[in-house]
Image 1 (tube, rainbow, N blue to C red):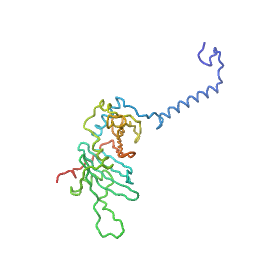
Image 2: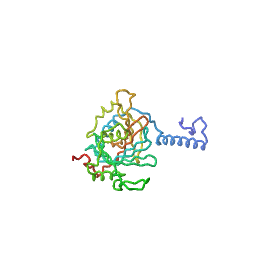
Image 3: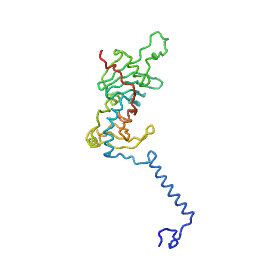
Image 4: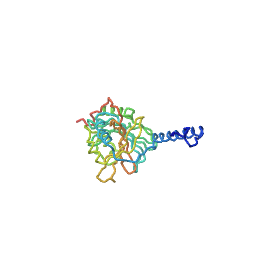
Length: 280
């Protein structure tokens, strides 16, 4: 006895050839749709889960990869938080070996834009604002800072910081402001050796989803829990490549508001200058 519907020995009536073709086309279409749903964002299961051993190793090496990649360019972005209505962007160069960073900070609030040059390390922040323009301008007219004092890119910030005298910097300790918390994260995220993957896995990080940035795929992970309580989730989220390259970190600075820190993959030739840390 045959096993196929169109076998001449079968006692069942074979469906017409056109119907068989339609059924086959429908099945193929359903299969293609299933594959497509798995490929597009939201088409896969994104329920947070415990990380695997391989993912723990990837997370454990990420901070060391960031250390090796420095000096590197980094961009910090902050949305309006609390009573603040403007956005803040810092474009900087960070050297994790020196644990120092220098960058251009731009604050945009509607039509108003203000800028300040920043240098920071684990102990605090130093600011250098553009020189005040000479007096004598027409009343009611807004005067701009000299062009040589306006910095908008990380490379410009480094060149300007290298040229400034130490006395132009105003030092201060870190505050609890969202910006200061993000700056502190920049110089503390790297480590000079890989972490302990097993210990990291026991501290409660979670795999959240896969995501693409600039055409590259990254695993998105929540950081280790702050306390032993499962309900006490980490304020940090990491985007980590298959080889452990750290691409992005977000930090919850207030409920519902996150600072985003983007790390560039390639090292830059420009290092962080000695000022304002040079002794007088």
